Amino acid sequence: MKYQLVSFKTCPWVQRAAIALREKGAAFDFTHIEPDNRPEWFLKISPHKKVPVLRIDDSISLFESNAIAEYLDETIAPRLAPEDAIQRAINRAWTDYIPTFASQVTGAAYAKSEDDYTAAIAKIDEPFGRLEGALEKQGSGPYFNGARYALVDAGYAPFLQRYFFLDGIRPIGKIEKYPRLNAWAKALIARPSTHSFPPGEFEQMYREQIRKRGVYLSQFVQAAQQAAE
Ligand SMILES: N[C@@H](CCC(=O)N[C@@H](CS)C(=O)NCC(=O)O)C(=O)O
Image 1 (tube, helix red, strand yellow):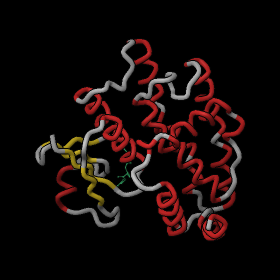
Image 2 (cartoon, protein in one colour; image 1 turned 120 degrees about the vertical axis):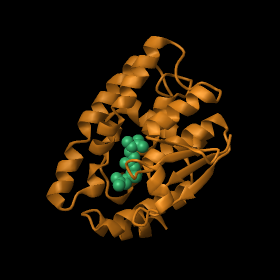
Image 3 (tube, protein in one colour; image 1 turned 90 degrees about the vertical axis):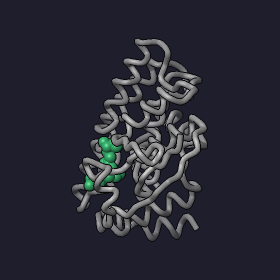
């Protein structure tokens, strides 16, 4: 099988599909396109005009990162979804929560004013608290189900990574209140499959994107970058 992952460089949903491919040890090519200049060939294969799209053997195009991840899990060993049906349902339920988690945890990246930013930060505790509770029920870590890495881990990793990126631009200081979540996030970030680019380079790309977005956080990017150098 030939896999081509059509992406925007910093897209967290693309990252989930890339993680699934790396966890499977499946060779793939990235095709990075620009959000502001999506080519005709891409618009023809992406019904919602979104990335990721996974092209298979230059003929089939799959879209939606969870559908892609599940397809890969069903077709390439090792299986990342739990064998146990109850655990699989629990994993699936928390996977379905990712879009809500993502918008509440990384909303600060889009806040236009200081008030909007403060309101966005105040929204982080709810999803963090819910995941802390889920992880308490699941067991000892380091991953969602324990020692075995699963698809649900691949789904959360990009958003937990972005929380840390935002925290690096302007300190948020929330995740420290949720020890299991914090440990899980760190384990996910330490896992090589999380990374499509060298981590430092990727953080810089993310910061640059925030700087260009012209949002409240943009003004803090330069100082954060200088402090890191
Ligand atoms: N639910 C989709 C979300 C994908 C998504 O929102 N991708 C963004 C980039 S990170 C995108 O393509 N946005 C372009 C647009 O909305 O027009 C998935 O999981 O694949």
